[in-house]
Amino acid sequence: MNSRVTRAAKPGIAVTMVAAAALAVSVPAVAQTPVGEVYASDASVRGSMVMTASGTRVMSGSQVAAGENVALMRLLRGGEIRICRGTSLAISEAQIGSPILFGINTGSLELHYPLTAISDSVVTPDFRIQLTGPGMSHIALGADAKGNTCVKSMEGNTSSVIVSEMMGAGTYQVASGRSVVFKEGKLELVSDSDEVCGCPVPKPVAPPVEVAKNVPLKPAAPEMASATPSVAEMDVPLVFSAKKILPAEESEHDRMIREGYTIATLRVVPLQLSPALMPSTMLAQTKAPAKKKKGFWGFLSRMFGG
Image (cartoon, rainbow, N blue to C red; front, side):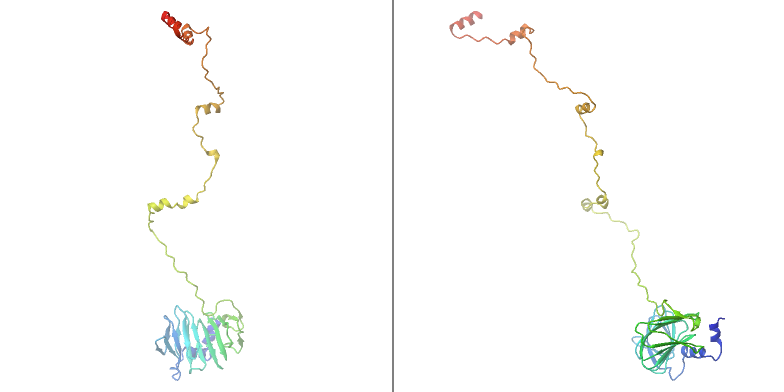
């Protein structure tokens, strides 16, 4: 058995009396005093309560347990309390405007309300945390099963926060804007803390992305397919190279020149023969016809010649 549980098991000590008063208040004189209204869909209330149109009105001596969500309790004297997920809070108030006694075993909560010249108290199995006004109270605190207790003076807090150990006489005042943690239920084991104290801020949830599965693709219309080029046709680059151009079909003349043949150009000249070499028939054909004589002598010549 560890030291924290051993201290709590001793009879007649202050921690047993204060924790019992905070977690199970049953005095008839204060049992019917309304404290505040709880707004949460999954919160549960043990003790006296009254159902209203807007929420559940909790009476003094009741216990409020938050579910999976943060339970919000608005005090009738003003302000609100945020009961973090999985935390059970006992609350007691003699009358509206008088000091309030809160009690938790494990869990965390946040206090946001104005304080007059009174002192409220939050009791854990190891510590008593006293909030003193006048001022604005913005306090976050939490405790786990190992006795580690965090106290944070949040932005805007102007009330005095004093922590005292249930079994000792020492006190520790939390400075404004500071967050500290007490290890193993001991006041002397205090250090600054960067861990979350109070209700964690929920992370934003991204909307689900719908993924289509086994959806057949519709073929494009013929006219649209012919008019609109595909992505592949638009992305392929056009490369021009003169070395890869195939030669056109060459003629026999061009082939002979490419292979080194000497081409002679022949000119056709009409044949001219000498009269001595010409046959008589050709010579007779080549002689120009004699001119016909005119007149009487010509007539005689044509007559005798015939």
